[in-house]
Length: 189
Image 1 (tube, rainbow, N blue to C red):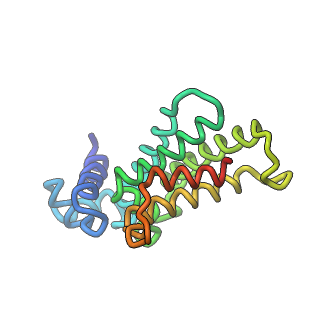
Image 2: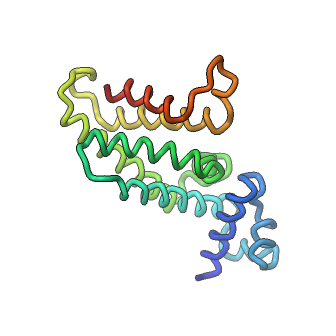
């Protein structure tokens, strides 16, 4: 493993163990057993290193998409939605970092490629589902990518509300599974 890859792996481990705010260049260097200046020999700064870690997160999410079970387009899309929320709930620190534009460089080419691949895969699942759907819930000609972006936003919001306690103070506290079921019913019918 290269020194660069070791620093990324160490940062990812630190992220999982201690959360986003604990992932500093000094902390990564200490955990990796290198000098405090070593990360700057491989990365231009914290944002570039955290972007590499976020890229790892998007790659992991993409791998979940590649492991969806066979089935109808609706079944595969539903499984992808479950996989997204499950990823967020089981990897809260990584999930947070992946979307923290204040900590990562959203223009970093590897990160753009990985996040775009996740969205494109999801959008294709939506397109296949919409092509097979026999309902007229959407206006004719609605771009499936807009539907995918809207559904992704709903899933992301649901996951964030669950992770950061936004639903815990509600007059009821739905499980992620029951809230996801209602969201999917609203989008997919």
